[in-house]
Every structure is written in structure tokens, then in C-alpha cells.
Amino acid sequence: MSKKATLELSINAIVIIVIAITFLGLALVFVKNIFSSATDITKTLLSKEPEPATPTKDNPITSSRETITTRPGETVVIRFKILNPSDTDWVFKPDVDPTKVECGKSNDDACYIDSSNDLCKSLSQDTDCNPIGKSNCNTASYDGVCYINPIDCQYPDDMDCAPTPGVTLEITGCTFDVQSEINQIKIGEIVPYTGVMIIPKTQPKGTLVCRISIGGTGANIGKDIVFNVE
Image 1 (cartoon, rainbow, N blue to C red):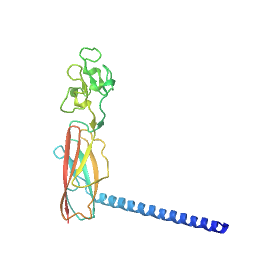
Image 2: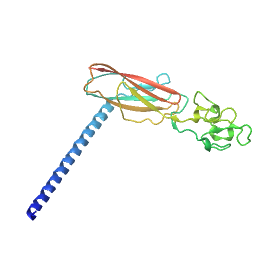
Image 3: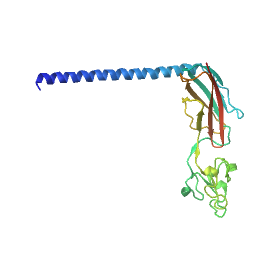
């Protein structure tokens, strides 16, 4: 191959690389603009969405709207407020490791009581027994304290010795893009939650019922949102 042919081949390769890089840059800008546009639309809709009412034990989930009139292809933003109405914190907790539980040892995640041992015969001797009023063997419910007694409540008889899931979220009847994660909800705590739904362009006219179910240790609550698709 002559030097001239080699030079022409090199120049062509450089041109192809430059063109490829240019198109790649344009594609990245295009994708960025699409996501930026979607984010701007969500922020605009969210700013116009009313604040939900304060939830109560009788109505633990409130929403900015309960019935929504929309059209195929539209984006819908809904605000929620969620109250933990149970008597237990909805906090993720791994199961208690029985090999680390010792008599008279605090901060081992278990209230260990042995009436035959002076080191751990009283609830007041183990800080893991707090609150003391909830330190008992619960085989069918949760109270937040893993209680172990070698005589009548061996590991893992107490349900609180098992892992707890924290907060579970289930959406049925539709698809929400979760905008705010919920990691935990303590007893009586109210947390905000935002969901974004894009009505499919192929969605037929009629009523669409979306069920939001949120739960944790000791309780599960839910709310229906009705979409009237025109």
C-alpha cells in the first residue's frame, strides 16, 4: 500500500471517529433534555398539587386527590401523607442472633431473663428490656422487645426476636413511579410520600382503580385512588 493510500485511510478513519463522537454527544444531549423535561413537568405538577389532610388512626392515609379525571398519555402527580397507626415502629430489624445473647448483657438486642441467675433475674438489669411494660413473651403479636426466658419463652418463641421488614409498599391496579422512598415510620409518625403515574396512551376510557397498600410490623393500611379516563 502506498503512503498516499495509507494517509487517505488514516484521514477517513479520523473523520469517521469525529462523526461518531459528534453523534454520540448529540444523543447524550437529547437524552438529557428528555429527562430534564420530564423532571420539570413533575416539579410543575407537584407545585400545583394540594397538600393532603393530616391523617388519623381512623384514616391513616390521606391524599391530595381521591378521584382524578385524566386522559391517556397524561402525567398525574399525587401527594400522600401516611401515619403509622400501630403500636410498633415500622423499622427494619434483622433477627436476633441467639449466640450473642448473654445473661446480664445489655445491647445484645434481647431481653434475657433467668430467675435462677442473680445477674439477670430482673427486667431492670438489662437495658434491652426497655420499655419494661412491653417485656413479655408474645408469640402472636409484636411489642418491639425480643424477650427470652430459658424456662417458658425460649428463642425464637417471641415474635420480636424474628426480623421485621420495616415498611412495605405494594401498588395494584396501576403503576406509580415512586418519587420518595419510605424507609421507616415510627409509632404515631406521619411521613409524606409522592407518586407519579403516567396514564398509558393505550389506556381505554373508563374507571381505573389504583390501590396503595403500605404496612409494617403489626398493621397494614391501604387507600384507593380512582382515575376517570376520558
